[in-house]
Length: 579
Image (cartoon, rainbow, N blue to C red; front, top):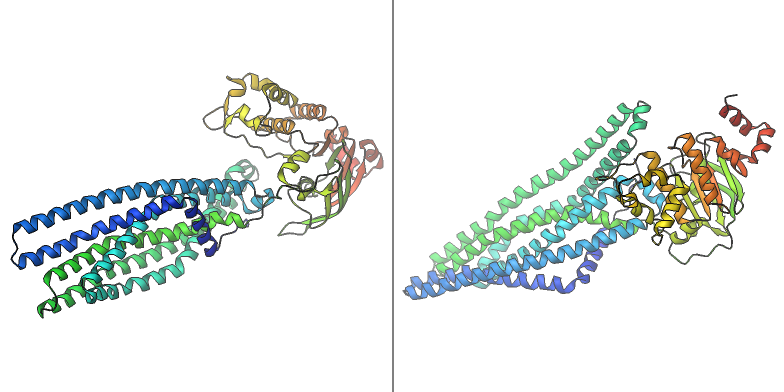
């Protein structure tokens, strides 16, 4: 299973929530004020109803009842309008805050080093950016305002009961003690359970994405049974963790529902006894009882929103956890003095395995075309990742112009070294949009030149709208070879001084691949090209060839020199030609 991205601690989540509130403090204050006014307006009805009862018992006429009933009606209307206004302001506050959360998430995700994202898996990042952000958004838009309204109503109602009769207020508060114990039991377990559920959701997203993207490989190697087993195990883990949160809710809510009745019963019993002795008016008992019955609705909302807050709090912790992940190198790193790349005594091992590179020394001269060849598992791709600054060596150094490549900030790195692998992506949008990602200032002439450099101008001109043709879902579909050509055209536009091709033409047919590589070589004249390839015609055309075996660089020289040396490269060359 992949290593998940960090999760924020509760204190960090609270600080992040306070920052969001301060960012729109006036709107938040308005929400609070309107909720308080709405709650205050809602208190008038039961109190006046108690007054009506006492006045009628005292012998007052219909005029008093009509007057007080009119006030009750006006206060009810005021409560309705204030509550609707409070929800409107609260929803606007929630939407603006959600926009800030989404923008911050995207900014943090884009600043993550590629190695961190790869180790975590795209499923974890996708789940946080979709399901978790959506949960946080729903809370900010709906649960947050509802919780504020309900808390204000509950506090005002309890305060009103205490104001009418302190003894009845004490009975009401003591009757709610059961809710406190149920809430403590739930809160001690909920955060851990919801975080575990979120992790399981990430694992499900990861295994589904990996299986779907590698479906052809799975089918080709007959790995269907293994992937089905792994998927079932992941889904079963997700089911068990969801059942755990369901169990917590199934215990918490019934306990709370029973606790609602206790304060009402206590007030009726105590109030009835006091009224029988003449120590309390019937209107006071009725008003207190109505208030406590009225308390059920805001308490119900509070406890439901508390449950929602546990889920959204866990989601917010996962979203905010990106702040704890390693960041890309900030701007302001040293500027390389030249384009020379030096690899010195480099060793590298992945987290769960032995050494992949075991002391590699290599110098790549500016403008050189270097081919790196060798059997699968020899360390070629790992070396290309170190040369591109994606990973840093465990020991030794990889430098460009005397500066460690991994220490360059993203903008400098893109202008120094670009890695193109056989993985490719077509972004939603037009052909032009896909190319302008690499160089937003490029005009159409530059775009067509880049397409021509990789042999893609022909099929792009045949599209209905040329550069303005929509690609991807809902637009024109592109196969693997065309998507790869678009990726290579972006490289041409990026115009780095060093280009690393890690089997970048693997999805092209041999004729198209050779044409594309030659076209790239012509466009990148005077630039450094490092090609990681299995097709040995690339090595034949290179200035030098480096042979990797078992994490070591065993041979280095020109094609002719290595063939004449009768070593590992000569054997590969003969096999390539069928000798």
